[in-house]
Amino acid sequence: MKKLRNIVIGFLCLAAPLYADVKKESRHFLTTEVGLGYSALLNQSALGKSSGLVGGKLQVGYEWNYRHLLVHTGLEFASINDRSRVQSFTLETPYTIGLPAGQQMNEHFEFQSFSETQYMGQINIPIQVGGWFANRYYFLAGMRLGLPVVHSASTRAQVRTYLTDPTLIGGLGEHEEVPVHDAYTSNERFPHAWAASLVNAQLSAEVGVVLNSFFEKPQKGKSKSSGHGKQPQKKPILYRVGLFADYGVTSCRDNTASPIDLASVSQPREITINDYYQASQTPIHSLLVGAKFAVLFQLNEQKPDKPLPSYFDIYIADAITSQPLAAHVDIYDSAKKRSVGKDTKNGRLRYRAKAGDYTITASNNLYYPAIQDATIADEGVNDTIRMALRPRPWLRLRITNTDTGEPLSVAVRLQNSKGDSVTTLQTVQETGVARTMLDEKQSYSLRIEQTGYETLIRDIAYVGDSLNLTLTPIKVGRKVVLHNLFFATNKTRILPQSEQALDELYEFLRDNPSLVIRITGHTDNVGSDQANQILSEGRAEAVRDEIVKRGIASERIEAEGKGETEPIDSNETEEGRANNRRVEFTIISTGGANIEQIHE
Image 1 (cartoon, rainbow, N blue to C red):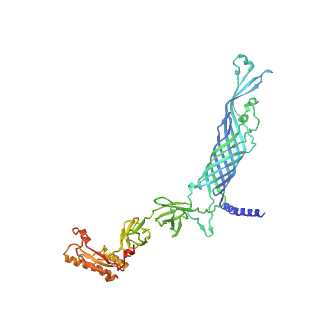
Image 2: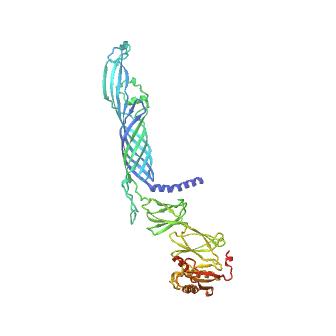
Image 3: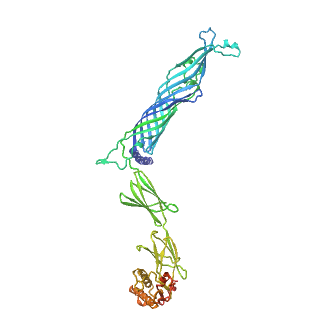
């Protein structure tokens, strides 16, 4: 008993929300319909055929609508009419009128153009179930139970009659039957009524369209409300047109009667097609097809429809491989001035949004972000967003010892050309490899300062390059030219654009505090030897003084000039003379430490 009670309670718990939803979403309509089309009373007999007539229907009904479900019933009057034609046939009966006793002749009735027009009216109760979809189209299917209430028919035939006397004619040999005379030829109507004995059943179907969806514009936004709450919406009137077909069995002709032998009918002039079909025992089917127009008056108050949800279906893919890509998606609502961040699953994200304008940004650490504007035009409208992220290029570095080829673990400083972004990488000891992603729209340079090695400075041509770089160990006697060091013409004054070169030399000596160097100045061969010697010495001393000012002890730096005595290029060209005008430093002491050995 307890188990049964729990089952009942559980059922009620499940049914209550469903009942509440059905009650809330249901719409009830009073319907009025009129239809016109083709009708016929069909039979399977080979004796004749039906050509059909115009038929129609009038109906007052009730229709219940719950979301996409339709249930329809009502009371209907249908007119099903038909014209049937039977191929020519002949009946024969004995004829004794005016003949002596014991004698008879045969009377023949040749029925030609034998036709009958039938009119049937019946009351139907339709029982139909169907659907409503896209807020525009509908269909109904079911059955109709009908009771014929009005039946009438008229028969028309052209009958030719003649008499034959087998006794009189038989002695003429091969001519066994010769008409003696035409008794009459008639063309008459025989009105009569049919009696209905059974309820008719018909299969029924219809499909059509709601006209309102074509001439009514959808309302955007929220309904206006007064201070007392939401205003009730006007009960709508719907108009729809459709095509229908009803097909079934009719009881208007009593086919259950015993077959009649037409040749023995005593009143051949009163024979009807009903008699003829009874003799052939063919079932009679009613058919009514056509078009209909309906007006539906909603009975209950139309509650405001909940706005249909709108969604962004966002797809993120790799721009090169087109494969789905996991990404973080930021959705900015322009109206609310706020963003919502979501992560995709398998490259796809469904986000519910209200009508308005949005900016969608998809990002992944390994890809350039993609930005796209999107709009939800109206509630219930979805939008599909497809975004392809372009992979960011990797800068790959491998740092090794110049002399031994062994990988080095060093810090690599990357700086953009604007000087406002600095990235530092650390190479792996075992491989000497490091990688990073940089902004493809900017240019960069790298700088490696490692104790015991010469400073390496290099511009990066493309942020997606793979660079194999080597660091040269510091050794006594190693000479290094100071590039980007500029002087006033024929002067020892250092120009301001030389600051970076001076800073680099200072940082090299700072990072290697045991080193002692000699700064040497060189000139081209323009001018006298003495003048060039004095100029080279002055420029070397000027560089030393600048480094000492920055904090390097003066005893760690020597200065000398070589004039034009040690050219490294030809003095016959301007480019060669520019290369010869240089300042370089030479490592003259490592302070007793074997620096190269330490970093091997």
